[in-house]
Image: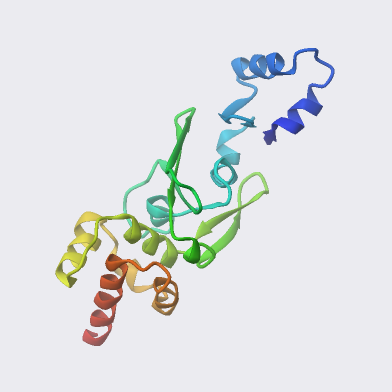
Amino acid sequence: MIYDMSFLHHEFSSYSNIQQKIDCETKKGKLIRIKRGLYTDDLKKDVYPLANLCVSPSYISFEYALSYYGLIPEKVSVFTSACFQKKVNKTFKTKNVTFSYQTIPDKVYPYGVTWLMAENGLHYSIATPEKALLDELYSVSPVRTLKDMEILLFEDLRIDDEELAKLDFSDCDEIAKNYHSNTIHTFMAYWKRRRTEK
């Protein structure tokens, strides 16, 4: 279960020093501190909703989502998320779990996000495969040639070609316009060339 300070203050209202009680429960391992004012008693079950709550609003994206959907072969241990209106990218670490946040353009934030249910019954938001790929491309150094894009996709990011072919690129086309990114523009040009070659 996920706890904020208002819940814990109510839960431990009979104690004269509530913060001391919270610290004691944390030392015992009954509570796990995620960040200031945010706790859980089951990190494994709560991890996906917590990824949304550490920085809000946010949704899981980038490498973690690409791995989640099988677009890259590696298992990604860092829970990477996209957020907006944040001046500084942030990272939170606790109990061998790391939550990392990167800013994307405000205009593109609402597009390509879906809701799934976690083990604890709570819902969490995650990028669609198409949005996760575009977010990842937005976050890398600029790529301006089709050859360099091919290298980025299949050598650097290790994108699975068969999984890439399954994506709905009409969705990509609609979302891509909102990034104003040279890399994403190059990716869309690369995709259109691939379509004409098939």
